[in-house]
Length: 287
Length: 179
Image (cartoon, rainbow over all chains, first blue to last red; front, side, top):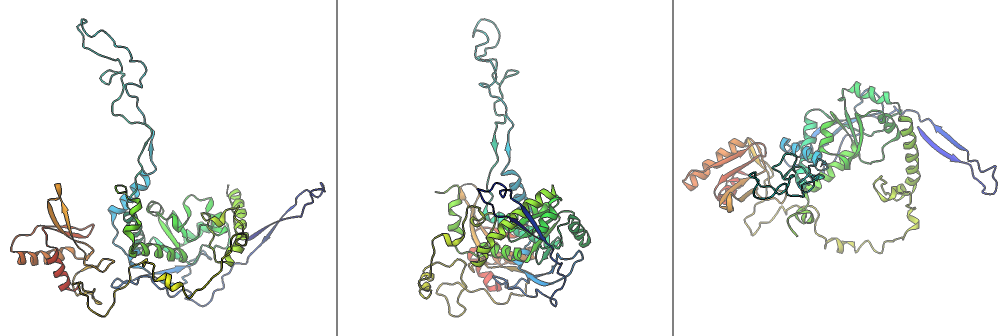
């Protein structure tokens, strides 16, 4: 469905014509189920071809129909999608993603903040009782807390680059190994009806929560409108892909363009020549 | 809520489709996070134009730039150092030790414990049966050094550590094994 917004030309001197009339022209696009002979996508050149590890092959499906139609078979790079999943690294990534933005607002008052306590309660000597300087000292009931929480306390830290990189590799490998990774040609669906998307996901046995990942952050209109009413169908550009979201959603659906971009970026970082010098400016303990 | 959001997406979509005319001609990709998606951004004709002077001389610039990715090693010829290239076929063993991205054997000397007193030989990038590899290397080291060798096998991170400085022995063993 393509929408055009049209306005009539207005004359500033003519008040009558100043009323802007908006015309909404809606063109219905016929659903295209006519396809060239299959397989459409049958080969894909891998960057940094793996020497001894076999590429993983996955089906490429369509989003045009509710029933799954396999359009072809592609290779996925084993260093990205067939890496031994490091559960400890995945855990570190999830912990980092949850904690780096956390700010604790818990607060307790110290002895100088608690109301009162400026005057010496009784004279130093003569009363026979213990000596004190303030009624709000930490040993007193109602006194200040010495090492309590102090608001706001940030818990920001940056996980190492390679830990985050390997977290993505481990999670993608785990998703593929557990049959939770699907490749589609594009995210173009024929209608913006939310029930179409629901039927599609149910028919194919994709998990309750699905994460659709595309290369561009401007997504097609239909899938944007269809998934908008569901909290568990989410659209994401490749640059937003993260371990927490991949684990939160049961199924991960990547477009071909997303796979290309993802592999290109991850393999570049795995094979780059200047990793040490590129990361120098982010080191905390060096000038 | 869906209709309101859909309408806003309609507006945003066709706003960007209008701008796509310039972008698509010049093959510039327009993201929400890019400058070209900004409403204040004008079409490229309004900005400083550029034209190619000579594309033949670009090779002189390119050869000055360092390579972005690790270049492949020359297949023929020997090195003056004792570096040997990785083999074309893997050895027929239940384990495999992959070379680093710079084609080096992944054996390192670490200094651990208080005040860096303990020397540890670490073997990384191990795939397959790590225990069999550990047994093989350990027996070789004990034969060569004629003393007991203490080792640690980390199955999750897939590395082996030997207490002592056996880097050269382990590297030689790995090269002889065909890794």
